[in-house]
Amino acid sequence: MKIVVGLGNCEDKYEHTYHNIGFDVVDALAEKLGITFNKHMCKGMVAEGRIGREKLLLVKPLTFMNLSGECVGLLKQKFKDARILVVVDDIDLPRGSIRYKEHGSGGTHNGLRSIVSYIGEDFERIKVGIGRDIFMDLADFVLSKYDKETFEPIIKKAVDEILERLK
Image (cartoon, rainbow, N blue to C red):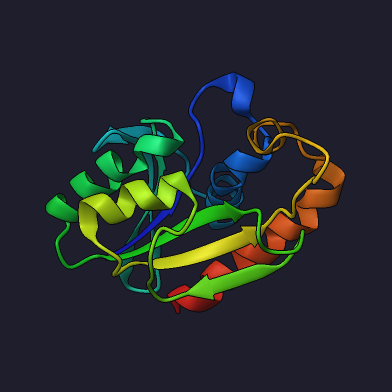
């Protein structure tokens, strides 16, 4: 089984903000695969599908970003041998870049740090570079809306990277 978790905040006011890029990527992936988020499981919204012969779960935690580990920890308990890939924004990467990491610490990202506290460092990540506005408070920046036209190709690039990694 493969699980792709997009990180974000679950309230409507956070839609299409930089910090919710993980949600937007898994939404685009679900659309590409023709599956829908229609189930609650392990404190998350879930879309079920297949990649080849393997079962695939796409998950959007409903615990808010800084508590993402609660959802991912429950998923890990339920699906012990599942391969977990987390999609997350990264202010330290140039806008539009995509970086894959096989494992590692949570760094400065509170969502990743929460996951590491629940399941350790052994999970994959797709980091979507959002850059950083040096003239804006960091929290204000990551919670601000991004330009959809600018980020549409970046989200598509992240979806393609995920599909390539899941083969």
